[in-house]
Image 1 (cartoon, rainbow, N blue to C red):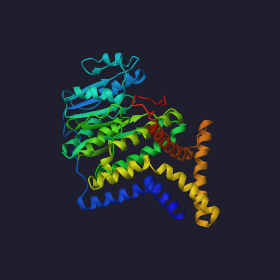
Image 2: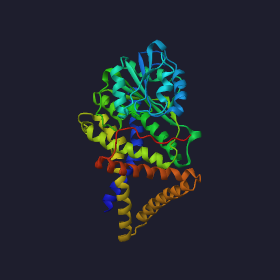
Image 3: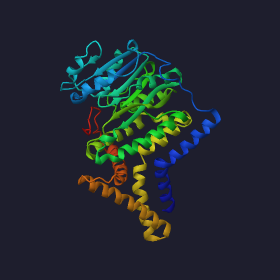
Image 4: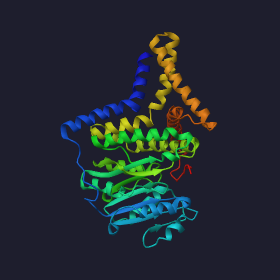
Length: 390
């Protein structure tokens, strides 16, 4: 029982903290041996680019998104702006159509999901690089130049930007989200420096058009699958933190949970469809990063949280040694903090320190719910928007 307890605790620790420590050490060693990876300055490499904005019923924010898009710094004769509003029943398509000649619009009344809309758009794209971004995110002015400079390196097949949660819009319920994304951003920087990021986030990512592969129409995490299929071809996915997409946090924890459950269900689906990437003999470095950063989080680690708690309690009942009693007390205190965070969230009371453990528990619950939803076959690939803070 003690062996299982420490093994469970080790995997949990490695998943959320240990991998970061190992990754940092490997990156420092790589830099010491080979030096830091070189990259061009923004504007030194300017290929043709298509910026695709997928939108579903975003009339409330569409005008602001268009103005943000038009303000991006890139040579206009090398940039195509393409908005896809498939399935939208509001005025989203009408608002975009006012910019005919500047922005291309693709609209279908049929709602088949984001990936179907992306496939339609990609069939019409001829540029060297394609950049995807969501309608409810806002890019910094230099984002496109910062992203495309990495494609001067022929080893690079995809580039992901950074997601930033607007700090003045962080809801009480999701105060932990900002902390989580800062930590994730750090891991992605190190992943990218070591070899490759393991998957791109849909808020802002890009691909070489020649490497793009259609994914199945029922794909839940289209952005993750599109980027990982490029990595599977032997190309690197780079992280560019200075190119960022800012968005509001989820309106409340219920909305954030809805988003996380969908991601978790998509994560399990992706693992099943990317089984070759689990082979370290075929993909030595990529497999190590993929398993450490994604697979453990989306599979066994949430279960091991429960197992380690139960085993710790059983050990203390049989042999109440001081070390195991201390470990049990620390675990119970952590979950009590999460529970208090939940109570305060319901009462609209701000204690941000409690929302970090609360958010951590919500994330792991979402994985369990996502696994259940995937097994039940009840997770649709069609857009399921989470309400954002106003």
